Length: 145
Image (cartoon, rainbow, N blue to C red):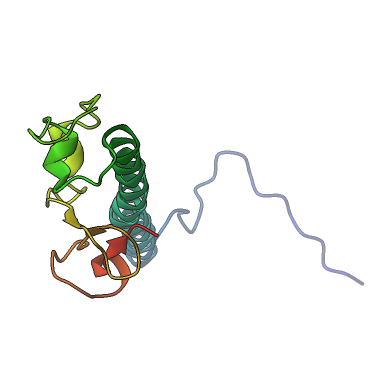
């Protein structure tokens, strides 16, 4: 024979209170903090990657402007400044080809320009985030290819 369970009378006090313990609340707060910290590093860390991609695009754009200068004048510019202000010895100059602000990389460092370059008629280089030759990742040099 099974024991008969009696229904609890309505309105009787509960013997145990429901809710979260202090340790459970602390654990949840720590987990949420970890998730927020991870998300913040992913979002804020993307800034360097965006600057590298922007520098790559700007180097290619500047190279196209150098080519346009060369097509108009029949020679390469002596410096990137020749893209902004007409040099005295450049017949056929139809610029300005660039604005002064376009001659600086995303880290606010002037692009390096060399004519002749090592493997090409000219080179345009951004030294990257560390502003020094060489490096890797965001510190790597960004060159016109």
